[in-house]
Image 1 (cartoon, one colour):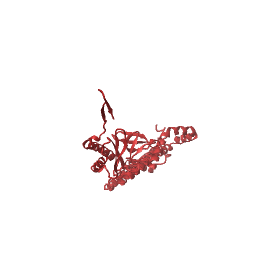
Image 2 (cartoon, helix red, strand yellow):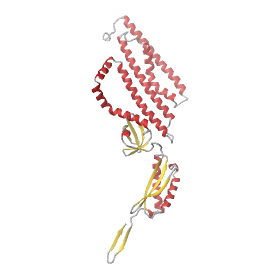
Image 3 (spheres, one colour):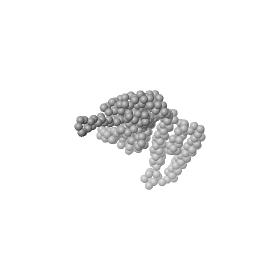
Length: 366
């Protein structure tokens, strides 16, 4: 087996191998010790700044550094691959580990940037439109960056194999058919990635936006590189391909601002005193606490049929959730008011009986 690896059974070969293994092992242990000391110091320095970017960097970079520092130390002392064939194999493995560690660290840095943006632009505040726009852009570009890092890392790892380089040349030689097949297979993925970048640039959709998608009311919970998760009002999750929001129409209730106008329609008899109902609406809104933002309100007759007329109560609210609760409250209170104060103004079917000459009676309903 040793002969198959090209390792001569000689004292010089064993001495060179032992020297190489000892140096690499010592360097790897030195890198691990450096990681322990370095991150212990960093954690102590950042203990007073919990939640800051420094703390996030220490938390996310600690794991990839466990691999990066020992591998980098081992490569610095490893002899060239032509010293011994088995040493060349081991050095190649260290190069692959280094590529993986660097890619891991770059991905961790994207999470550090995400944490920094979450802390700087917090969406838990009431007026969070700008923060939601910034977070949406950063999250989409972070996912695109992670995908790019993974692709580049895989390409770099494959390029370390001579056979892979020859395969790449063969693929380039037959790029016509191969490019067509790969293009067709990757079209859904690429279209979704491009759609994500387009959404980030045009700001048509942001994290925590209130939307109507496929007839469902919900909030944007997650924007991934290829899909969007909508948290529906009953806590179901609607997963939609991200290119849907580029190719299909949808309602965005918080595109530029979160405040909304809510409406309540009441069908009444023609005898209803509209001015009294209007004053009652104002009283209900004044007693609704923070559900009504005080910006606008009104009550008008919007329709009149042969039996009833329609009153439309208009009111404003700071966001969609408050608008929904306010509409329900106004609807309940107005119906209760009509039942108590003006029961004759509720919708009714009138009937009139006319007595005709003779024994019978004719009944007319209207």
